Length: 315
Ligand code: BDR
Ligand code: CA
Image (cartoon, rainbow, N blue to C red; front, side):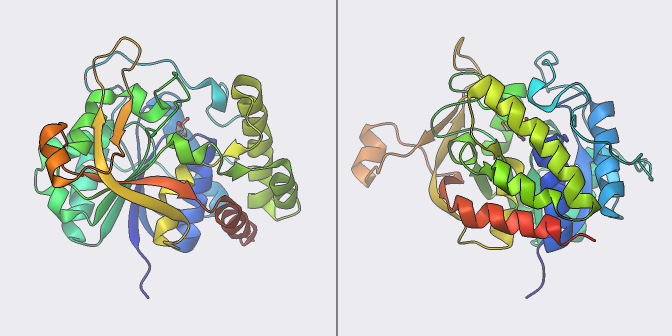
C-alpha cells in the first residue's frame, strides 16, 4: 500500500523531533512547517533543520507564524529547556528554510495532493488556522488534519489546558470549527504513552540518531518527572502520526470538540462531548454535531516499541 503523504507543522521540541524522525522513516514526508510554540520561531526552525540534518532527511521547510493569532506571545516551554532541544549535541543545520511562508506552503502542498495529504499539527494551531482562513477550500483538499493537542480530561500547562491549544486557543477554535476532517490526540492519552528509562537505554545502544535521541529523552524524562511527577517521557507528537502507520494503536470516538477561548481558569481547554447523546438528547441537552475523532486510549507498549524500533532503524 502507498505510504500516506504527510506535512508536519511543528515546534521542536523533544517529542516533535521523534515525530519527524518517525514520519520520515514510515511515511511519505513532504515537508515541515514551523510555528512558535515550545520556543521562538527562529529557535524551533533551527531545531527542525538540525533534526533533518541528524536524520539525513531532505525535505523542504517553510517558516510560519512567530506569534499567536490574537493573544500575546506565551512563555517558552520549560519542559524542553532553554534551546527547545536540551540534552544532546545536535548537528548544525545543513539547509535553509525555503522562501515561501508556511501558510502558503501548506495551501500549495494540499492543492497539489488533493484528497491525499494529511496535515499534522503538532504545535500551536496558528499556521493551520491562517491557512484555512486564507484558502477556504483547504478543509476539503486535505485528507485529514491530525492534531496533537487538547485533552478529554486533565491539562499539563494548566489544570484543564494542554500546551499547544493554550498557546493559541483562537487558532485552535478556527481549526475545530473549519469543517475539515480532524483527528485529535490529547494529553489524556499522551500522558501515559511515553518512553521509560528502559526504552531510552535501548535507544542508547543504537546508532548516531537513536543515541542522540536517547540524550534528548533523558532530559525530557527528567523535566517531566520534576514538574509533573511523570514516570515516562510523553511522546505526545508522534501519537498524532502513528495512526497512518497502524490504525489499531489508538482508539477514537467521533465527538464534538469546542475550544474555550474565554474562561479565567479554562482558557485553552478542549471541551470534548463524550456523552452518548441520543437524537432527543441532542435537542434537549445542547448537543453539537461531532467535528473530530478524539483519541480515548492507546496501546502504549506497542506504540512506543514501534517508535523505538523505527529510531533504531536509522544507520
Ligand atoms: C505538546 O506541547 C509541546 O510541549 C509538545 O511538543 C507537544 O506538542 C504537549 O502538550
Ligand atoms: Ca510540539
